[in-house]
Length: 154
Length: 430
Image (cartoon, rainbow over all chains, first blue to last red; front, side, top):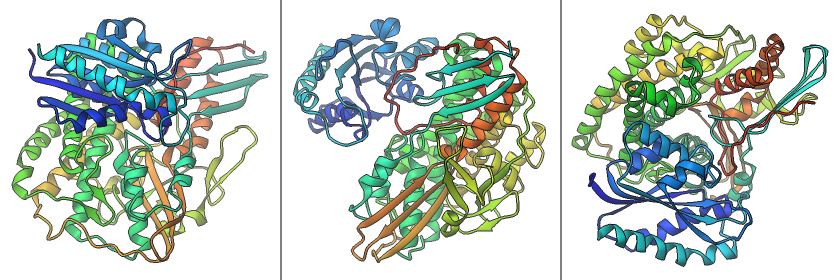
């Protein structure tokens, strides 16, 4: 145990269409008012991520990702180990999550457990509103985050 | 090597916020073209704002940049308040300055420690720097957290603060609430002074810029959240005359629009701010600058890391001054009644001058919005530096030249509105 129970960190910009999936999912989680769960909005800047997840038992990051071959709206679950090795190409924020994971390790400030839910984006052009496939993934992603939070409490 | 045609393409720039691409073309020992595609102008936001209420730009434009949302909020508020003929109560203006100091501390600490210092210390990134010098990176982290503490306390949260509104704030704190923040900032002041001493030990390549400098000017104090405009060439004008002096135009050697000041090249940002306002620094910041070997002006872009470090000292000291004299304002915001007209607002974002203009109708609906950020103003200066540095170093191999060019770009801490693309680095020969 490290300190606070759990943090849900949403990365993304709602004015870059599907890049707003992270904030959309975190917004739903926030409305549930779950005890012991902090919600943090992030632009993916790694030092900010480190500050958000240090001293927590469970950190859940929700971010838009790109994947080949693409399947917009598909939800991927990645652990810190997977992020550390090959996820430099997974997050849509280059100077972002993998960098933050490695920096946290160098400074010994990792969360107890780190899970990233990456939702495949279709459209990250300037604009507001999620594409249909990505919007349809919100309930799936919310359920996945809630399941992870429940697993963290056991 | 320098006599053949050579093209260097860097399709992703490491340790620059967001995506960026650089293309250098060399012919006959001279750099033919230096193009930096690093900045995406906020055209979407300008269009998105049209038809919306005068109350909305602070929240919407804060989304343009996660690193400097307060700058966008503040320039937006300044412009709309001017259009509506509103002047902030003095205590509210001071609170706005305090919030802005938080952004300077946070943004500058990020750039100094996590993006720029590895260049001077021979590390590929701050992760490897942290492995060898954890104490140094921890200091940067603590400093950044002190800035974030101001943003979270006053702004409601560090990313895209929600407590800012046209006319002031939604909520203002009681004096007693500020005590823990002051304590954190007192500790940060020592860290900030140590940062200047540390950065002063770096080895700075020679490069001197000759072009004009433009910054905000706030009589008697260092410019932060508002002001008129001053240039090194002696220009002095209010924000409402910005469009009369600054114009963006097409140039032959680049695809990006280049901004000029009365037809000539200029630079905004820390070097301009410092060179035009160093006499207005606070006592500890001035002493730190002098002991670091900075004169009254600084025209070497590589030394911008030192100027940023001095500005962090200033911002911490200024934040402590504001907290020390703070009395809770009578009201959290001045009432702003819309009227038809145009307002202009400037503030000094961490990267330099940020200009907003809004035309409102009688109901307060936005008819037109213009946003000119510092990176877009500095595009010409960055490309010019690249051309000069590359030309003087054509004997280097592609990798070393690429590294040097990336350093030149990082001197300006350039930003992009929102990073949604991967960073990959490839070098192609012509």
